[in-house]
Amino acid sequence: MSQRKQQLLRRHRKNKRMAMLVLLLVIALSSVLFSWWCLPLGLLLAWLVHEAWFADHIFYAAGDDYQYSFPAGTQCHALQIIGGQLHWPEAEPASSDSTLILQVRIKSSWLGRLLDPWVQLGDDRQAFERGARGIRYLNLTGQLEQLRSGLVLKGQYCQLQPTVQLHVFAAPELSGKRLLILAPHADDAELAAFGLYSRMPETTSIVTLTQGEIEAEFYHQMGLEPQQAARLKGRLRSWDSLAIPLWGGVRQEHCVQLGYYCLQLPAMREQPEQAFGSRESGEADVRTVRRQNPFVLPSDEDGIPSWTNLVADLAACLQHFRPQVVVMPHPELDPHSDHIATGQAFHQALEQLDEKPELLLLYANHLHDNDRWPMGDAGTGVALPPAMEPLPALPLFSHVLSADTQMDKAMALRMQHDLQPPLSAKRRVRRVIQQLLTGRRWPKTGDNEFLRKAVRRHELFWVRELEQQ
Image (tube, rainbow, N blue to C red):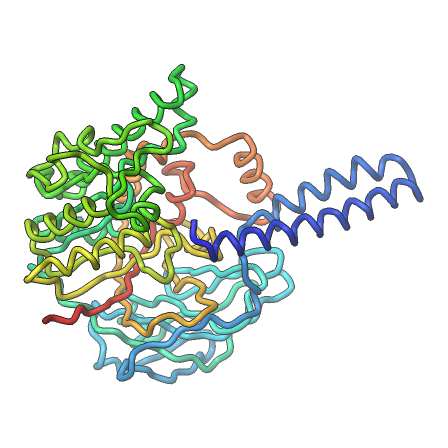
């Protein structure tokens, strides 16, 4: 977890504790002034209110504008919502694969403070945080033809100002190009880009950096000691990283597992020559999960989990696969420490290469300040994530996943061992409360939250060109 996210989480917990203390004082005073039964009833109601409306981790004011800027020269068209429809008859500058992002100003109604406000756009809907007010960005990608004839655009539990701006981004040319996905952990490639890589499996390769051995409590229940459980989980998730891409058509010889250890990449970066073994499994040799790799890596010689070896391994993978496009975590949006370190190791590995990729496609599987994004239901579109601080002005690339591809993606995620353990009793009760009181829904494909967040109408990337020397 990044330092910024830790600070946001501490502030969130402090504010929640203060609010709970005030509420408890009010309940206690009511029980003294009126009747003893006010105390248990008040505590029950307070718990229900918390679970229904205050359990989300959203660490910003819902009334703030999202702070996005786009590169100079980006097509921008001022349009009007008239009679609940948006028309763009002069759509010649765009093509069917263009990424269409609509900047709107919304204001939640009083119901939008209790229920998730959402916008109906054609046959799609996209949701925002409760109480949302200000500038937001809808994803209209895939609805160009409807825009030409008139796209339904109506708010539910919110109102839209009629004046909007449509930003149009040409899709990068990916056909026939060699694509490499950098996954800090098993499942990151599927979460971010299953739809993309299953569209071009013959030219895709996937490199996963870590075993994913930590947080193995589910395997303790099988009678294993903590180190045994961590080793088993590391082996299973390493297997996932090599085997599951085949479901999307990527051959095993195009998949590599580097075998480094979870949450150790930042420490490795600070002391590049030092070995950093697993925090939980007791292992310190990356070769234990590399037996199925398709070629020999530099650190296969000693198996030392060091930053120097990681950079050398990444350079060897880049030299072997010679990607023209690299898919990797967004360094400013995605706060996971291993995700940030993955990007840093990649850029150091680039320094060892003569032939460099042309393009980066950046994804965010986690956010600093909102653990529900993409908000709303599985199968719906992906609006732009909250950006409360200015981000680099980059073009966007979004593409549409068919219903069949979404189902395949859901099944790929269900194969991931890290997403299989059942929900805790606390989370199950919370979901029941939120379903009954706030109308939230989760998909039938599985309980894990990523099956709601990642299996969507769109996948979304930020596009960064690499300078060629």
